[in-house]
Image (cartoon, rainbow, N blue to C red):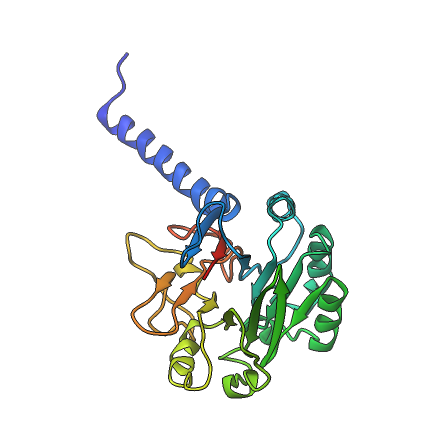
Length: 273
């Protein structure tokens, strides 16, 4: 007995729907894409400093993908892990952040900034800073920290969140010392436009942001909405003016627990002169 065309189309529609749902709820959320970028003359085995960006974790529990992420980071052994905000978006998940940090090699230096989520979630910032410090992580709120790795210096400037905080780039670079590399962390990419107008006295090699989730739901280029603070930025590189900007799609989700056309990512930057 042959199946009618109507039934074939129905089965096909069900299969397609199942695949799309599996992709949105599972594959794009939990199969993290690792993106590697070599800056300037950096090559596969020739680089000065290795930096990893983690953004928009929106931690709620420690699941297997997060355990695998931590294992990957520990094996990668970057010089710096840079966390660009929205790590948690509710005070009740503060302990989950600590559980995640416990999974990471404590010897790896880390720096973090705030996103809008830490503010809207009424996270205790004093407690947050204390937890970060306990796991070799510096929370940068309008300030700069300088690191040395194998004779190379890198300064990390962190600004407060553009939407809910009080970002002040001028105050953040007040203690900046000339370094081989200078990276600015700003959760909202729109703040890059402000930074670009205030670079007379400091060189910025790169701004790292998140916030947009790459749209989180991107259907053939159509994105229902982007959060305030995204500006004209969605994801990836923006090099049309200085400073160059990289916007991460991030790792977690907000509002709806789905990703479509915006797969979770971790970016690795190899820096050389």
